[in-house]
Amino acid sequence: MEKCNLCSRHCNIYRNSNLGFCGMSDVLKVALADLFFWEEPIISGKNGSGAIFFSGCNLKCVFCQNYQISSNNFGKEISVTRLAQIFKELEEKGAHNINLVTPTHYINQIIEALEIYRPKIPIVYNTNSYESTEGLQKISKYVDIFLPDLKYYSQDLSVALSHAPNYFDIATKNILQMLKSQPKVIIDKNGIMKKGVIIRHLVLPNCTDDSKKILEWINKNASNALTSVMGQYTPYFKACENALINRKLTPLEYKIVLKKVKQLKLKGFVQELSSADKNFIPNFNFKGV
Image (tube, rainbow, N blue to C red; front, side, top):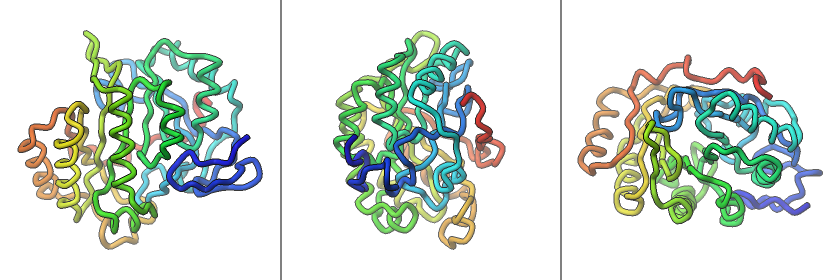
């Protein structure tokens, strides 16, 4: 047992007796484990990504579409052994990869499970990027594909929407470390990603200038990563009461950001605005758990 400092909150507590910012004890909690078809095409492919949605979160964004599990901590407690079995079951279903969604606060347990059973398919680390250096170093040698968010440039935004001081500095430092661990994008002959980094950015309403600064940073510092620009934002949870972000993107806002993507010649993916639909939100029904 050790005090938890896996993310940049540095709660420094024993999670078997206290709860930190993420709201989770040291017992694994999972809400869904299933084939998932709504990631980037080189992640989902034809068979789907083997997504495991962990409960709890170290950001708790006010607009999170998965707020049931990230902020309300909905989920089912499982053992490390059961997690290892889930890896194998998803692999046997034909998943292209094992997709660990919001895994930061369970790094230790995930490593234990991977020591029990290491799938022959890639391990995807799907994160908000608010890691600690120590946590990222622990998990990196087990990860084939990093799928980090780069949410905000502005500290005012990161504090207001995710209670995360210095988010940009912390996230970019971590992304650079991820790129050192997996510096080259490798895609097989079937169009499925095997190695590398995809940096995701969700465009928010009224925040096009922030998005452009993030894209400029990626262009300057992370050209060996793919970029995934997302237009799926739909107001949920506390965002419905927030005047800044209580609506979907306008086509003009998204066009401004996509113009910047084109100008910088960033390689990767651009999501359609039609993705801003509640139908794409997972049903957290404990399937596969």
